[in-house]
Each structure stands twice: as structure tokens, then as C-alpha cells.
Image 1 (cartoon, rainbow, N blue to C red):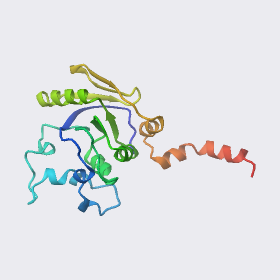
Image 2 (cartoon, helix red, strand yellow):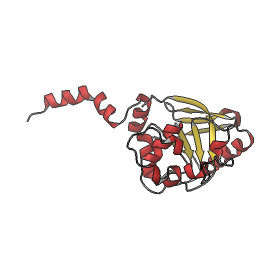
Image 3 (cartoon, helix red, strand yellow):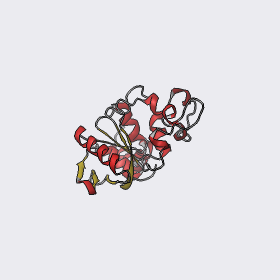
Image 4 (cartoon, rainbow, N blue to C red):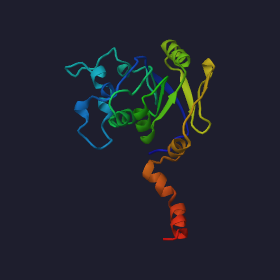
Length: 196
């Protein structure tokens, strides 16, 4: 995974609440075990009509909205535990998701796949949506090191929480295996001292 530190990007708002993993990536597209290629079917049933023509009313088909930050309604990632939902979001190009609540399993899957889920208070989420409704080119800064989400032009500054392990993995571009390998010298040292 790529290293994560500071991201400055425009935002893509999806106001809908209770977006479940089947809406993020429908079950019929879960046939691959590779993480690549899922982005093209992200929100497939919302992005396209049944005949395959893009739905012009859906936000991802609106060229004025772009960026690495998805701003989503409350309770994002609920439903089944499929990791493919995180794969699809990452493959599409999202590195950060802002919401007022995330389903626990989705949150874990996101962190394990290089996506930073940032939980904000409902009133802050509403303020972000209001900003984007009027000024779609507004950019935000996500500073993982200092754990800050900021929209400077609108005096929005949030100190977000993340556990130290996930933070270190994101900042170093590690998955669980990479992290273990980074601790190899400590493991070897421990094993040498251990009496069998």
C-alpha cells in the first residue's frame, strides 16, 4: 500500500444514509479474489441504469465532483462483512471517507486496505454537506500525523481518532504482514533470548 500522511483534495458528497456494502459493490461482482478492477463497479446499481447507460443524476457521473475524499451519510458500510467494498472504494480512488458513523467491520476492512475512515459529529457532517452543496470545488486537508481534518475556508477543524496500530500501518504503507516483517529484528531478538 502507498504511504499515507497528508492529503489535500476536493470531496465527493453522497448524502444518503445507511449505505450498505451491497450498494457499495453488488454481490454479483464478487467473483474475483484480486483487489484490482472493483472500482468500475463501485455503486454500480446507482451509477448505471439497467441498460448500462450512466445515470446522469448520480454524483460519481457528475464531472464537477472529484477527489480522494468521499463524504457519506450516517452509518456508512453497514450490511454484510465483504471486504470487497473497501477494495472497490480504494480501486476507484478514494483514500478517505468522512461520515458520522461507520459499521465496525467495514471500518476495519477500510483501514486494512489503506482507506482512512474519519468519524465526525452529525452537525459537522451536515456542515460539510452544506458547504459542498454551494461550493463543490472546496478542498479539505487530511493530516494523519496530527489526526486533523480541516476545511480552512469554512473554519471546519476536526481532531479525529485512530488507534496507534492502524495509524502506523497507514503512515508506512503496511498491511498486517508488512507490519510483522518490519518488526522482524525484534522477533528474532526475542526468540534468541527465549529459553526453550
